Length: 355
Ligand code: NAD
Ligand code: IPM
Ligand code: MN
Image (cartoon, rainbow, N blue to C red):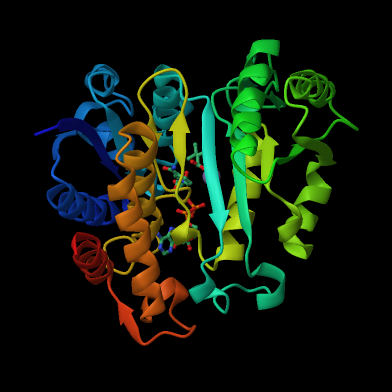
């Protein structure tokens, strides 16, 4: 029987709760599809600090390299917020993405028909929304040097090399070719040199994709347009910080940030992670929505393991559960027949996905 080695990083806050449900679903589909998943748990973030003193232990860096793919929950929380920056959970996550070379973060923002009433926007505005945010993940202002904090001033550096922009643009154009062949590249070229540079390189890459329609938009306008008329977008290509912000905004088209998955891919092993954080405000209550993580597991099966039927099973199980009115609290006010806990939602998806 085919066996895949899956790195599992549960992390902090709701991380362990949501990852446990994703594993439950993965186990169900692997049995149904006749392959084997072997899990290797690793530490990252706050829980790694508590156990080892650092947010990204060497064991994790080495461990992920030996896996076929890595499933990740979320890190961070108030307990670790006042540590020095190099010791913070978030620094551990950024370090891991850099180590793994996962420069392309794919964040699909889709609206389930069953949840059109769950968004804070009108159904007519969001029905049929299907956007792929392609976010550059290992460069830009998150990583630029110099970066310093002093008593009277502080600064970061927003920097992109030609190769960094080119390779993320290629990912976006390749994806667009399999979709509606439209890319909107989002930047702040009216103010920032780094964005002007970004735009020029994206234009250059576009020459290799004559079938793809390329447009450019300033990030402030893009934030507004996402809310005004999200259906105008197919693929959004953007840098690290703009992609972080726009994808959280886009999540509310779907009804909850607890729904949106992501795939961080690039040079080697991929990292599959929900777009949301560790939600300390609801951690330990059993009410987190596990669907973003379960969908991330589906992306892992599809993109890293090429187990497309198993991935389809999960996606269909999610639709079916939503169609039948099962909801976690974050989407609970809308057309809900039954409000589920995190565990109950995992049980339902695992059950449907295995049939
Ligand atoms: P967050 O995404 O954790 O939470 C924002 C809001 O959304 C909260 O009200 C939370 O309860 C809700 N929410 C998030 N996920 C949910 C889910 N699955 N189900 C139901 N509700 C959900 O963002 P934040 O509050 O700004 O950050 C909290 C911590 O998480 C911080 O330490 C931050 O640095 C970290 N963070 C980590 C990641 C990651 O690990 N990839 C991503 C974002 C934030
Ligand atoms: C995300 C998070 C991270 C990011 C933080 C926690 C470093 O917000 O995955 O979206 O900004 O990339
Ligand atoms: Mn974010």
